[in-house]
Image (tube, rainbow, N blue to C red; front, side, top):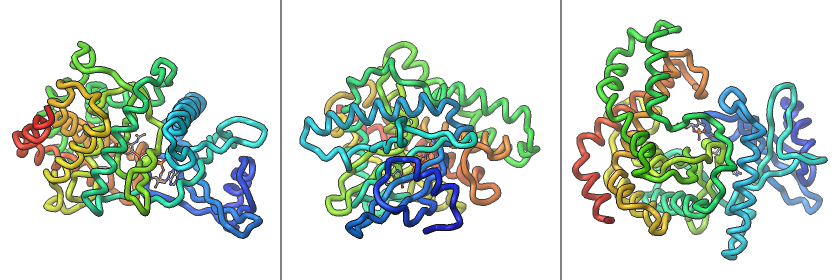
Length: 368
Ligand code: ADP
Ligand code: GN1
Ligand code: MG
């Protein structure tokens, strides 16, 4: 029993978990929530695992609405998975209720939930095998297809304007202007990088506003470590981290995956010579995502896939830079200048995509 964490144990015991709590330890590499792995010992002497999370209340202002989204979406997915003869215990997140009812618990201003642990699967922080990236694409595309008839109007906007790149740009400019940490002078080059691409920031917002591309129910945070790959089949068995499931564009989901997974280096790599957009991975993900979406992407969306990749990368770099300028209170950091390192990899990736633009277009347009 992990004695150093009595508070966590007290919280976990309030949920309908099975067996005797044996261990609790930090888990995963998410940037937002506090995530712990719980291990319980059953009477049969087998173990049963759970994921305990403190939702980040600074980021998610409305935990109740957030959990309504999560329970709504997972209940909907469970039904579809059952209809198709799948295993809903592994193919969607499963919320473990609080004893006496409810999907989350408030303790001293902290908001907690428990999910069943997805057994026999792993999430990855880097692409280890190209086939894995392809399978993640099929699964993220399929996830979007499964949610195509989800009642979008019932979803709470858990983070307003999450992928509104124009709004992100305005927030970035404000951070530069206020320069509360006196860091702007040190990052003039990075600031210039964003301002030189101001026009790009409007592209997807304008197309959504004019109805030229459709609003869909999207995941909005499709990095590789938000999907569990089965140990045996290596297929994308379960899409996790459903906190940002909201109305959005298919290009957000496609683009965010490319941003993270097609990068030849880590998101926080300091050696920028290791950063580039791997066109083979780009092509594999494109193929998998289009297949996973099962013919639901429009011609316009397919033509815009490279733009989705570039804009999600630019936007994420801008968010890291904004957080750096504001004093690192949004993303978890593990070293000084962590957000600045992350920002630099994103901008390096954007630059490389710009250099490879024609090839990226040829790859995506081969699906028209
Ligand atoms: P964050 O929002 O901080 O990214 P996540 O919900 O993505 O939090 O969880 C962080 C990590 O914990 C994931 O990348 C994954 O490795 C692991 N994880 C989360 N939920 C589960 C689950 N139900 N089963 C197994 N692992 C999980
Ligand atoms: C965060 O929660 P996590 O670590 O899966 C962030 C994403 C960023 C990503 C960058 C709610 O994702 O938007 O793209 O970090 N999630 C939220 O790695 O802001
Ligand atoms: Mg995550």
